[in-house]
Length: 273
Image 1 (cartoon, rainbow, N blue to C red):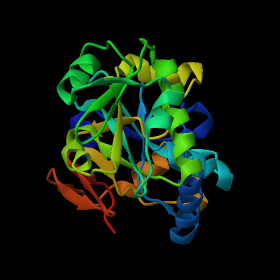
Image 2: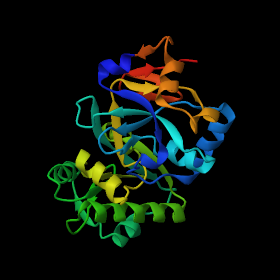
Image 3: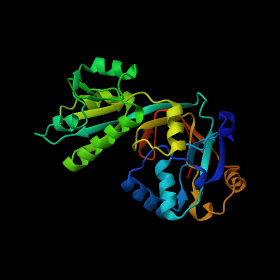
Image 4: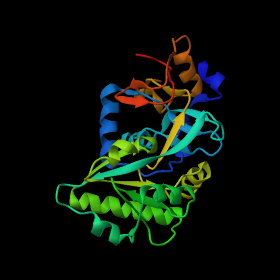
């Protein structure tokens, strides 16, 4: 199996042994559970750190399994310390209706120190601040240094305000911010650089990141395992591997489109439909 070459291992694991490190979006969990029931399969494996059981990718799938009463999942275990697994961030983009101001939202979180965009990125890089709020022509920093968990409280506060105000919230990879910053009614929230130790600590302590904070890239990323849901609760790793034996794996190049999303890493389709 090509995964063995990458140093990854595929198997069936109890969902109780898996430790999420981020919160989930309930509407996404519900739509994913509906999709799973309709298709009757676990489409993609959950990506898990082999050593700690931390879920690196698949928090919503894990929550959907819980809602469906499924206690086992097809997982790909990886060495989190490997260079094949990289960690970056999602940024939050709030789009304000015409005529609305973000000033009161920033004042509520004491995010009022106005600086240039360049100075904001510099402060984040030095970890002088926990987050920056970016606009098309300026940036705003907290008036005091905040640790990571206090930073996440600020993020959740902005999420709450955006929901009450009816702002649209989107998520973009940190390296794709330029387009979002061009919108005059957009504000972009970016937290400081995360470490893999931050991720594992959140999972073990159950002090979860806000949804869509960390972004993991796994190269090659295993997808399309397509294992029947009806068999998961009694499945074993041996059964999973037997189902995949003889299948024609397919490796897609970086920047390929899969299931409506474009991936920057290579994709390994384990059981293409």
